[in-house]
Image (cartoon, rainbow, N blue to C red; front, side):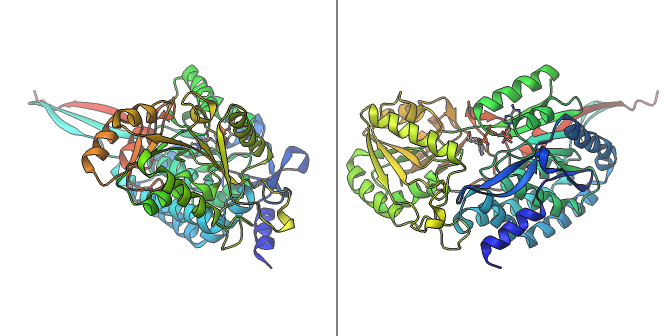
Amino acid sequence: MNRREFAISLATEVSKLNYVNGTCCGQTSNTCFDVVDPATMTCIGQAPDSGEETVNAAVQSASKAFDTWAATPPLERSRILLAAVAAFEARVDDIAILISLETGRPFKTETRPEVVNAVKIMRYFAGMPLEAKGESFLYAPNVIALTVREPLGVVGAIIPWNVPAMLFCLKVTPALATGNTVVVKPAEQSPLSTMLLAKILGDHLPAGVLNVVNGMGETGQYVAQHPLISKLTFTGSVSVGKHIYRIAAERLVPVTLELGGKSPLIIFPDVPIEKAVQHTITGMRFSRQGQSCTSTTRIFVHDSIRTSFLDRLQFAVAAMKMGDPLDTDTEIGTLINREQVQRVCRFVEDARNAGVVVQTIGNQPTDSYFSNGCFLPAVLLLDPPMESPVVQQEIFGPVATIHSWNSFEQVESAANGTEFGLSACILTNSISDALTLARRLKAGFIQINSGMVIQPGISFGGYKSSGLGREASLSSMLEAFTQVKTIIVDHNRE
Ligand code: TAP
């Protein structure tokens, strides 16, 4: 069996399934939608388009499991979660290859590192149940005030397709570690890998604690609106995030929102060109065709090094191998679907028509097997006006805008000049310039000479329209998935 046949066999194994009450529940084809491999545009399986009834069954099962799971001693919860992580770790390659098949992201540069990181995130939170501590203090001579942290109930987790295993773990594990039960709605583009992950983890969890309902946008809406959902955690676009927030407001349900970005990369003149180029390639996520919320899509390069930087950048991106996402030497894969290809091309064409200089880097794969695939070469847009759509809107494609800068104040103001505030990257050897700028940037996740992805233990989240709340750390787990109960004790013996 070659790699493609193996990936398709995994897809077939989890096709047409939801995971509810500890079992895989099959659906008939007429209630399913096709899952398409964006590298070949062929159907690789189907997923249920779950209606209100199925969502209700999943939420009811999570609600039924809640009391027992919440009452399970923290160390026992930890033991169960760690056993689930071990099973997950043993299947890293299987999950990664299935994500590659579904989403077109390359196994080597994208999905395997994503899944390895997802395991780390899950293991981190699996060790955390005992950390859901409260406070105590002596309020008065005979009065002790205590706070205890309690779980919220059933968590509805709605996730996108672009890093599905990592985002699944970022939401599900801290929720479970603190005693909540969960209903996950995966994106319609990545239902199969999420099902495989749920099946692997579910074997180690009590029935009902973890549920996955596949479907299109409506399914997510049913999850968000369900009266037994006590917390919503969402990652996705700003428009859907605002919609979820409105639904939650009606019932005063707490919400965590991780939304879009339009992040700046700011390159100072003291940075070696090669280092600037490497950070640009990593930051832009060219290997993922730029489909990342933290992609540094606005590159601010100091005027004095611009020409040599652009020459080297073009050379380095052109050298990256675009092709079959499943191959172990492919470095750049596809966009998620045809609609996204068209959307990205429209942004570029509109910019070109408005007079912006467009530089295209790289070619399509030569293998005719992939001639229908959603591949696009990388695009640099030189000096578009700050108010133009390509600078202001999240394109979610391999398109970076290039801007020159000369003064600190100019770059600070330009970098802050969008509605987003998810992340930023600063490259310089001057610690005072770097820290001054980091303090002034209105973004939630700032890296100085660093290009890390979300890591366990480090808070992650956005300012402005990029979201509400934080993820990935102990403080974010406590904030997002527990509520505080105060108990006041007067132990006066009179
Ligand atoms: P969305 O279209 O917003 O979809 C995200 C999820 O919401 C999917 O599961 C989707 O289901 C569901 N959904 C859609 N309409 C819904 C509704 N009315 N009610 C409830 N759920 C609904 O985003 P996307 O295109 O999949 O992902 C790309 C976006 O995610 C980008 O904006 C990106 O920046 C953002 N993102 C942010 C982060 C962080 S950490 N900030 C990380 C990754 C991605 P269907 O697929 O069935 O429509």
